[in-house]
Length: 409
Image (cartoon, rainbow, N blue to C red; front, side):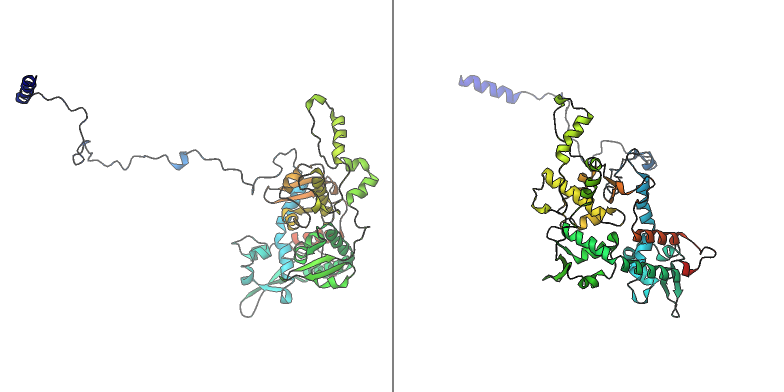
Protein backbone atom coordinates (compact mmCIF):
# COMPACT_ATOMS: atom_id res chain seq x y z
CA UNK A 1 0.00 0.00 0.00
CA UNK A 2 2.97 2.30 0.59
CA UNK A 3 4.01 2.26 -3.12
CA UNK A 4 0.49 3.26 -4.19
CA UNK A 5 0.43 6.23 -1.76
CA UNK A 6 3.88 7.30 -3.07
CA UNK A 7 2.71 7.09 -6.69
CA UNK A 8 -0.39 9.18 -5.97
CA UNK A 9 1.51 12.01 -4.24
CA UNK A 10 4.07 12.10 -7.04
CA UNK A 11 1.36 12.37 -9.67
CA UNK A 12 -0.35 15.27 -7.93
CA UNK A 13 2.84 17.21 -7.45
CA UNK A 14 4.05 16.76 -11.00
CA UNK A 15 0.73 17.51 -12.66
CA UNK A 16 1.02 20.59 -14.89
CA UNK A 17 -0.93 23.65 -13.92
CA UNK A 18 -3.79 24.54 -16.15
CA UNK A 19 -3.70 27.88 -17.86
CA UNK A 20 -7.48 28.24 -17.47
CA UNK A 21 -8.49 30.20 -14.32
CA UNK A 22 -11.95 30.28 -12.83
CA UNK A 23 -13.48 33.69 -12.25
CA UNK A 24 -13.32 35.05 -8.71
CA UNK A 25 -16.91 35.20 -7.46
CA UNK A 26 -16.23 37.39 -4.45
CA UNK A 27 -13.26 39.51 -5.23
CA UNK A 28 -11.88 41.61 -2.44
CA UNK A 29 -12.24 45.27 -3.40
CA UNK A 30 -9.15 47.36 -3.35
CA UNK A 31 -9.75 50.33 -1.12
CA UNK A 32 -7.18 52.37 -3.03
CA UNK A 33 -8.85 51.78 -6.36
CA UNK A 34 -12.25 53.45 -6.89
CA UNK A 35 -14.91 51.14 -8.19
CA UNK A 36 -17.39 53.85 -9.27
CA UNK A 37 -16.48 56.44 -11.78
CA UNK A 38 -16.63 59.94 -10.36
CA UNK A 39 -18.49 62.74 -12.11
CA UNK A 40 -16.81 65.95 -13.13
CA UNK A 41 -20.04 67.94 -12.62
CA UNK A 42 -21.36 69.46 -9.30
CA UNK A 43 -24.61 68.10 -7.86
CA UNK A 44 -25.00 70.66 -5.06
CA UNK A 45 -27.99 72.19 -6.79
CA UNK A 46 -30.05 69.02 -6.31
CA UNK A 47 -32.64 69.07 -3.46
CA UNK A 48 -31.86 66.08 -1.31
CA UNK A 49 -34.04 67.03 1.69
CA UNK A 50 -37.74 67.80 1.98
CA UNK A 51 -38.27 71.53 2.63
CA UNK A 52 -39.71 72.42 6.01
CA UNK A 53 -42.82 73.93 4.47
CA UNK A 54 -43.64 70.57 2.86
CA UNK A 55 -42.97 68.48 5.94
CA UNK A 56 -46.07 67.35 7.84
CA UNK A 57 -46.47 69.34 11.04
CA UNK A 58 -46.48 67.40 14.25
CA UNK A 59 -49.42 67.93 16.52
CA UNK A 60 -48.45 69.52 19.79
CA UNK A 61 -49.22 67.53 22.88
CA UNK A 62 -51.97 69.08 24.98
CA UNK A 63 -50.46 71.09 27.81
CA UNK A 64 -52.18 71.65 31.18
CA UNK A 65 -51.09 75.28 30.89
CA UNK A 66 -53.41 75.87 27.93
CA UNK A 67 -55.96 73.05 28.12
CA UNK A 68 -59.26 74.47 29.44
CA UNK A 69 -61.00 72.78 32.32
CA UNK A 70 -64.30 72.98 30.46
CA UNK A 71 -63.49 72.12 26.81
CA UNK A 72 -67.09 71.45 25.85
CA UNK A 73 -69.36 74.44 25.13
CA UNK A 74 -72.24 72.57 26.73
CA UNK A 75 -70.56 72.61 30.16
CA UNK A 76 -68.87 76.01 29.92
CA UNK A 77 -70.42 78.98 31.72
CA UNK A 78 -69.26 82.13 29.89
CA UNK A 79 -70.42 84.53 32.61
CA UNK A 80 -68.10 82.86 35.11
CA UNK A 81 -65.22 82.45 32.67
CA UNK A 82 -65.41 86.19 31.93
CA UNK A 83 -64.60 86.98 35.57
CA UNK A 84 -61.16 85.45 35.13
CA UNK A 85 -60.62 87.62 32.06
CA UNK A 86 -61.62 90.66 34.11
CA UNK A 87 -59.07 89.73 36.77
CA UNK A 88 -56.35 89.51 34.12
CA UNK A 89 -57.39 92.86 32.66
CA UNK A 90 -57.12 94.64 36.02
CA UNK A 91 -54.10 92.75 37.36
CA UNK A 92 -51.84 95.78 36.94
CA UNK A 93 -54.37 97.98 38.73
CA UNK A 94 -54.78 95.79 41.79
CA UNK A 95 -51.11 94.89 42.23
CA UNK A 96 -49.75 98.37 41.58
CA UNK A 97 -52.32 99.90 43.92
CA UNK A 98 -51.27 97.52 46.70
CA UNK A 99 -47.54 97.99 46.05
CA UNK A 100 -47.59 101.78 45.78
CA UNK A 101 -49.66 102.22 48.92
CA UNK A 102 -46.78 100.70 50.94
CA UNK A 103 -44.06 102.90 49.40
CA UNK A 104 -42.76 106.11 51.02
CA UNK A 105 -44.92 109.00 49.84
CA UNK A 106 -46.74 106.44 47.62
CA UNK A 107 -44.46 107.06 44.63
CA UNK A 108 -42.07 104.90 42.62
CA UNK A 109 -39.60 105.69 39.85
CA UNK A 110 -40.33 104.19 36.47
CA UNK A 111 -36.80 102.83 36.22
CA UNK A 112 -37.38 100.83 39.42
CA UNK A 113 -40.88 99.85 38.30
CA UNK A 114 -39.49 98.28 35.13
CA UNK A 115 -37.73 95.65 37.29
CA UNK A 116 -40.89 94.79 39.26
CA UNK A 117 -43.07 93.14 36.63
CA UNK A 118 -44.22 90.45 39.05
CA UNK A 119 -45.03 92.85 41.88
CA UNK A 120 -46.80 95.38 39.64
CA UNK A 121 -48.56 92.89 37.38
CA UNK A 122 -47.44 93.94 33.89
CA UNK A 123 -46.03 91.53 31.27
CA UNK A 124 -42.38 90.66 31.56
CA UNK A 125 -40.16 92.47 29.07
CA UNK A 126 -42.69 95.28 28.59
CA UNK A 127 -42.46 98.83 29.85
CA UNK A 128 -44.76 99.72 32.76
CA UNK A 129 -45.62 103.09 31.21
CA UNK A 130 -47.92 101.41 28.71
CA UNK A 131 -49.96 99.89 31.55
CA UNK A 132 -49.95 103.19 33.44
CA UNK A 133 -51.44 105.10 30.51
CA UNK A 134 -54.29 102.58 30.39
CA UNK A 135 -55.71 104.04 33.63
CA UNK A 136 -55.24 107.83 33.38
CA UNK A 137 -57.76 108.65 36.11
CA UNK A 138 -55.98 106.53 38.72
CA UNK A 139 -52.23 106.72 37.93
CA UNK A 140 -50.08 109.62 36.85
CA UNK A 141 -46.41 110.24 36.05
CA UNK A 142 -44.29 113.18 37.12
CA UNK A 143 -40.86 114.21 35.83
CA UNK A 144 -38.48 115.31 38.56
CA UNK A 145 -35.84 118.02 38.32
CA UNK A 146 -33.14 115.36 37.94
CA UNK A 147 -34.92 114.16 34.75
CA UNK A 148 -36.29 110.98 36.39
CA UNK A 149 -39.92 109.99 35.91
CA UNK A 150 -41.97 108.93 38.91
CA UNK A 151 -45.23 107.00 39.18
CA UNK A 152 -47.92 107.96 41.68
CA UNK A 153 -51.63 108.18 42.41
CA UNK A 154 -54.02 110.77 41.05
CA UNK A 155 -56.29 112.78 43.40
CA UNK A 156 -59.17 110.50 42.35
CA UNK A 157 -57.23 107.42 43.41
CA UNK A 158 -56.31 109.01 46.72
CA UNK A 159 -59.97 109.77 47.40
CA UNK A 160 -60.90 106.18 46.55
CA UNK A 161 -58.21 104.91 48.92
CA UNK A 162 -59.62 106.97 51.76
CA UNK A 163 -63.05 105.49 51.09
CA UNK A 164 -61.65 101.97 51.08
CA UNK A 165 -59.79 102.50 54.34
CA UNK A 166 -62.92 103.80 56.02
CA UNK A 167 -64.88 100.83 54.69
CA UNK A 168 -62.32 98.34 56.02
CA UNK A 169 -62.40 99.95 59.45
CA UNK A 170 -66.16 99.63 59.41
CA UNK A 171 -66.04 95.94 58.44
CA UNK A 172 -63.19 94.95 60.76
CA UNK A 173 -65.36 92.97 63.19
CA UNK A 174 -66.86 91.04 60.27
CA UNK A 175 -63.37 90.11 59.08
CA UNK A 176 -62.43 89.03 62.59
CA UNK A 177 -65.35 86.59 62.50
CA UNK A 178 -64.13 85.28 59.13
CA UNK A 179 -60.61 84.69 60.47
CA UNK A 180 -62.01 83.02 63.55
CA UNK A 181 -64.04 80.60 61.44
CA UNK A 182 -60.93 79.80 59.38
CA UNK A 183 -59.04 79.02 62.57
CA UNK A 184 -61.87 76.79 63.78
CA UNK A 185 -61.71 74.83 60.51
CA UNK A 186 -57.93 74.43 60.58
CA UNK A 187 -56.38 71.17 61.78
CA UNK A 188 -54.63 72.48 64.88
CA UNK A 189 -56.72 75.65 65.28
CA UNK A 190 -53.77 77.77 64.15
CA UNK A 191 -52.71 79.47 60.93
CA UNK A 192 -49.46 81.14 59.85
CA UNK A 193 -49.99 84.88 59.81
CA UNK A 194 -48.13 85.10 56.50
CA UNK A 195 -50.75 82.95 54.77
CA UNK A 196 -53.59 85.17 55.97
CA UNK A 197 -51.68 88.22 54.79
CA UNK A 198 -51.00 86.67 51.40
CA UNK A 199 -54.72 85.91 50.92
CA UNK A 200 -55.98 89.12 52.53
CA UNK A 201 -57.70 90.37 49.36
CA UNK A 202 -59.57 87.07 49.08
CA UNK A 203 -61.31 87.62 52.42
CA UNK A 204 -61.25 91.43 52.51
CA UNK A 205 -58.71 91.62 55.34
CA UNK A 206 -57.03 94.99 55.75
CA UNK A 207 -53.33 95.61 55.34
CA UNK A 208 -52.99 96.63 59.00
CA UNK A 209 -54.59 93.52 60.46
CA UNK A 210 -51.21 92.08 61.51
CA UNK A 211 -50.73 95.07 63.76
CA UNK A 212 -54.28 94.91 65.13
CA UNK A 213 -54.26 91.29 66.27
CA UNK A 214 -53.51 92.45 69.81
CA UNK A 215 -56.84 94.30 69.89
CA UNK A 216 -58.67 90.96 70.10
CA UNK A 217 -57.09 88.99 72.95
CA UNK A 218 -60.28 87.01 73.56
CA UNK A 219 -60.22 85.63 70.01
CA UNK A 220 -56.59 85.32 68.89
CA UNK A 221 -53.16 84.72 70.28
CA UNK A 222 -49.99 85.52 68.33
CA UNK A 223 -47.18 83.00 68.82
CA UNK A 224 -43.64 83.43 67.51
CA UNK A 225 -41.98 80.08 66.80
CA UNK A 226 -38.29 79.26 67.08
CA UNK A 227 -37.68 79.97 63.39
CA UNK A 228 -39.26 83.41 63.70
CA UNK A 229 -42.52 82.49 61.98
CA UNK A 230 -45.56 84.19 63.49
CA UNK A 231 -48.59 81.94 63.95
CA UNK A 232 -52.13 82.99 64.84
CA UNK A 233 -53.87 80.67 67.29
CA UNK A 234 -57.50 80.40 68.36
CA UNK A 235 -58.15 81.31 72.00
CA UNK A 236 -61.84 80.47 72.52
CA UNK A 237 -64.05 78.07 70.60
CA UNK A 238 -67.37 79.66 69.65
CA UNK A 239 -70.06 76.98 69.08
CA UNK A 240 -72.37 79.51 67.43
CA UNK A 241 -69.81 79.97 64.64
CA UNK A 242 -69.24 76.24 64.18
CA UNK A 243 -72.30 75.94 61.93
CA UNK A 244 -71.61 75.71 58.22
CA UNK A 245 -73.59 77.31 55.43
CA UNK A 246 -74.78 73.88 54.29
CA UNK A 247 -76.10 73.06 57.75
CA UNK A 248 -78.04 76.31 57.88
CA UNK A 249 -79.45 75.71 54.41
CA UNK A 250 -80.42 72.16 55.37
CA UNK A 251 -82.75 73.57 58.03
CA UNK A 252 -84.46 75.79 55.44
CA UNK A 253 -84.39 73.72 52.23
CA UNK A 254 -83.55 70.08 52.85
CA UNK A 255 -84.02 69.00 49.22
CA UNK A 256 -81.58 71.63 47.96
CA UNK A 257 -78.79 70.33 50.17
CA UNK A 258 -79.54 66.74 49.17
CA UNK A 259 -79.03 67.70 45.54
CA UNK A 260 -75.84 69.66 46.23
CA UNK A 261 -73.43 66.70 46.21
CA UNK A 262 -73.39 63.26 44.69
CA UNK A 263 -71.62 60.29 46.22
CA UNK A 264 -72.83 57.36 44.10
CA UNK A 265 -73.36 53.90 45.57
CA UNK A 266 -71.83 51.13 43.44
CA UNK A 267 -74.39 48.56 42.34
CA UNK A 268 -74.82 45.98 39.62
CA UNK A 269 -76.88 46.40 36.50
CA UNK A 270 -79.00 43.48 37.53
CA UNK A 271 -80.91 45.72 39.93
CA UNK A 272 -82.37 47.70 37.04
CA UNK A 273 -82.73 50.91 39.06
CA UNK A 274 -84.41 53.92 37.54
CA UNK A 275 -83.35 57.52 37.96
CA UNK A 276 -85.41 58.16 41.11
CA UNK A 277 -84.41 54.86 42.69
CA UNK A 278 -80.74 55.50 42.03
CA UNK A 279 -81.03 59.00 43.50
CA UNK A 280 -82.59 57.66 46.67
CA UNK A 281 -79.90 55.02 46.88
CA UNK A 282 -77.15 57.64 46.59
CA UNK A 283 -78.64 59.52 49.52
CA UNK A 284 -77.35 56.74 51.73
CA UNK A 285 -73.86 58.07 51.01
CA UNK A 286 -74.73 61.76 50.84
CA UNK A 287 -76.32 61.96 54.27
CA UNK A 288 -75.36 62.62 56.94
CA UNK A 289 -73.06 65.52 56.10
CA UNK A 290 -69.67 65.84 57.77
CA UNK A 291 -69.17 69.22 59.41
CA UNK A 292 -66.13 71.20 58.18
CA UNK A 293 -65.57 72.27 61.78
CA UNK A 294 -64.87 68.70 62.86
CA UNK A 295 -61.34 67.33 63.11
CA UNK A 296 -60.79 66.05 59.59
CA UNK A 297 -57.16 65.14 60.27
CA UNK A 298 -58.31 62.13 62.31
CA UNK A 299 -60.32 60.63 59.44
CA UNK A 300 -58.91 57.88 57.26
CA UNK A 301 -57.60 59.51 54.11
CA UNK A 302 -59.52 57.57 51.44
CA UNK A 303 -62.81 56.89 53.22
CA UNK A 304 -66.18 58.31 52.19
CA UNK A 305 -66.36 60.39 55.37
CA UNK A 306 -63.00 61.98 54.58
CA UNK A 307 -64.09 63.00 51.08
CA UNK A 308 -67.38 64.37 52.40
CA UNK A 309 -65.38 66.35 54.94
CA UNK A 310 -63.05 67.79 52.27
CA UNK A 311 -65.97 68.74 50.02
CA UNK A 312 -67.65 70.48 52.93
CA UNK A 313 -64.43 72.30 53.85
CA UNK A 314 -64.04 73.68 50.32
CA UNK A 315 -67.69 74.78 50.31
CA UNK A 316 -67.33 76.58 53.65
CA UNK A 317 -63.98 78.06 52.61
CA UNK A 318 -65.50 79.55 49.47
CA UNK A 319 -68.50 80.87 51.37
CA UNK A 320 -66.11 82.93 53.54
CA UNK A 321 -64.51 84.65 50.53
CA UNK A 322 -65.71 87.96 49.16
CA UNK A 323 -66.68 86.72 45.70
CA UNK A 324 -67.45 83.08 46.61
CA UNK A 325 -64.56 81.84 44.50
CA UNK A 326 -60.86 81.08 44.86
CA UNK A 327 -57.93 80.19 42.63
CA UNK A 328 -55.73 77.12 42.85
CA UNK A 329 -53.06 79.20 44.60
CA UNK A 330 -55.44 80.13 47.41
CA UNK A 331 -56.64 76.55 47.86
CA UNK A 332 -53.09 75.18 47.92
CA UNK A 333 -52.08 77.86 50.42
CA UNK A 334 -54.29 76.24 53.07
CA UNK A 335 -53.84 72.65 51.93
CA UNK A 336 -52.21 71.39 55.13
CA UNK A 337 -54.36 73.39 57.51
CA UNK A 338 -57.62 72.19 55.88
CA UNK A 339 -56.45 68.56 55.53
CA UNK A 340 -56.74 68.59 51.74
CA UNK A 341 -54.99 66.22 49.34
CA UNK A 342 -53.30 66.59 45.98
CA UNK A 343 -56.45 65.15 44.37
CA UNK A 344 -58.57 68.20 45.20
CA UNK A 345 -58.93 69.09 41.50
CA UNK A 346 -60.40 65.69 40.61
CA UNK A 347 -62.59 65.78 43.70
CA UNK A 348 -64.13 69.10 42.67
CA UNK A 349 -64.76 67.85 39.14
CA UNK A 350 -66.90 65.06 40.59
CA UNK A 351 -69.26 67.64 42.15
CA UNK A 352 -70.45 69.78 39.19
CA UNK A 353 -73.78 70.59 40.85
CA UNK A 354 -72.15 72.81 43.46
CA UNK A 355 -68.70 73.75 42.12
CA UNK A 356 -67.70 75.17 38.76
CA UNK A 357 -64.07 75.04 37.68
CA UNK A 358 -62.93 77.68 35.20
CA UNK A 359 -59.61 78.48 33.55
CA UNK A 360 -57.01 75.92 32.55
CA UNK A 361 -55.97 72.65 34.14
CA UNK A 362 -52.83 74.25 35.56
CA UNK A 363 -54.31 77.59 36.61
CA UNK A 364 -57.93 76.98 37.56
CA UNK A 365 -60.42 78.71 39.80
CA UNK A 366 -63.39 77.22 41.63
CA UNK A 367 -66.76 78.97 42.00
CA UNK A 368 -69.80 78.38 44.17
CA UNK A 369 -72.46 78.10 41.48
CA UNK A 370 -75.39 78.91 43.76
CA UNK A 371 -73.81 82.24 44.74
CA UNK A 372 -74.08 83.60 41.18
CA UNK A 373 -77.02 84.43 39.02
CA UNK A 374 -77.41 83.57 35.37
CA UNK A 375 -75.90 86.96 34.43
CA UNK A 376 -72.69 86.27 36.34
CA UNK A 377 -73.49 88.72 39.13
CA UNK A 378 -73.20 87.80 42.77
CA UNK A 379 -76.59 87.37 44.38
CA UNK A 380 -75.37 88.83 47.67
CA UNK A 381 -72.51 91.33 47.40
CA UNK A 382 -70.14 92.28 50.17
CA UNK A 383 -69.55 96.06 50.54
CA UNK A 384 -65.93 95.49 49.55
CA UNK A 385 -67.08 93.89 46.29
CA UNK A 386 -69.27 96.91 45.56
CA UNK A 387 -66.27 99.17 46.10
CA UNK A 388 -64.07 97.06 43.82
CA UNK A 389 -66.63 97.30 41.02
CA UNK A 390 -66.64 101.07 41.48
CA UNK A 391 -62.85 101.10 41.23
CA UNK A 392 -62.99 99.07 38.00
CA UNK A 393 -65.40 101.57 36.46
CA UNK A 394 -62.97 104.41 37.08
CA UNK A 395 -60.13 102.29 35.73
CA UNK A 396 -61.90 101.91 32.38
CA UNK A 397 -62.65 105.63 32.05
CA UNK A 398 -60.23 107.71 29.98
CA UNK A 399 -61.49 111.08 31.21
CA UNK A 400 -63.69 112.45 33.94
CA UNK A 401 -67.39 112.50 33.24
CA UNK A 402 -68.78 116.01 32.75
CA UNK A 403 -70.17 117.52 35.92
CA UNK A 404 -68.55 114.88 38.20
CA UNK A 405 -66.46 116.30 41.04
CA UNK A 406 -63.88 114.48 43.15
CA UNK A 407 -65.97 115.11 46.27
CA UNK A 408 -68.82 113.16 44.66
CA UNK A 409 -66.73 110.02 44.18
